[in-house]
Image (cartoon, rainbow, N blue to C red):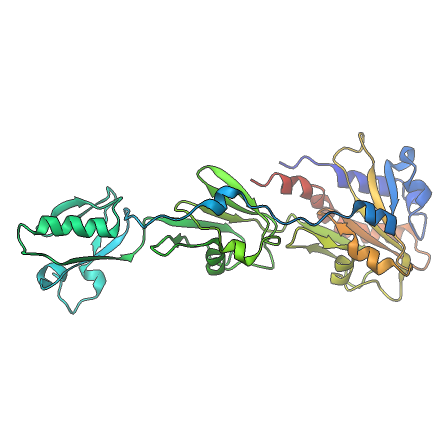
Length: 364
């Protein structure tokens, strides 16, 4: 549910107090650091701040029950199609004629789990393994056929499925067969829409439990170690909630989505074409980050002096978050009206970004 008002409130503060916070050519650091004026705190991005706040990289922990699950021998279910062979008895094996396709002589396991076979009658196949069904049919045929040699094979697996939804190019259900299906194999077949997917939050639902998996932080070997179970549901969210907005004196102001769980300030500026070499002020790179309730805590504006020799290293280690607004100030004197003109066309975009963090947290 959209209930966060943090970022729009920050922007209102910036608009109402334009002369104080952006007096002509840049944001006033004294105004930003005065909570009585703007309820906004200014934080300088320095090596010391990066060292104190850089998140620790941790490997993705996969729930033990996912790793410990081992598939069992395949059991026949309703919806499976079987091909039953009785050697030396083509009238039983291929009543439609040997020249016909296998499907024409196949046996469908009906919705009640039963199938019909000549001289055997109706038999409950659901829940049996292939070997168990073969033995059951052979035993019943002994009344009519001496030493019947029976073979059973599954030619279509329709009873045990894994469903897919979200940012995949192919969302058709995948079949669980006699060959175990791993998460890695299933994702390869479904084909991730890499441009629009949020790879940091795949959700696997099994037996009423939802497991969140960060695909960026697990190895391919781990993906191949997670076996899927009939009835599993796999959902991969789109990344449309994971947006930041880069505006001001960059080559291509834009809304930027990211598929991973983090994006650096360097990457954000790079995907916007970098700072405008003619109009940008290297000293005025700001990241505006809203909060849920300005009455309880101030919003934060992070400031990077891009003219510093260590600026690129600092920007590469600063992680932007969904809903952030990156603003690059101009080098020359700029009227407040110009900044306002840059902001207004993106107002609806920025308003939507205010809810990004809460929407991501509310993902099932």
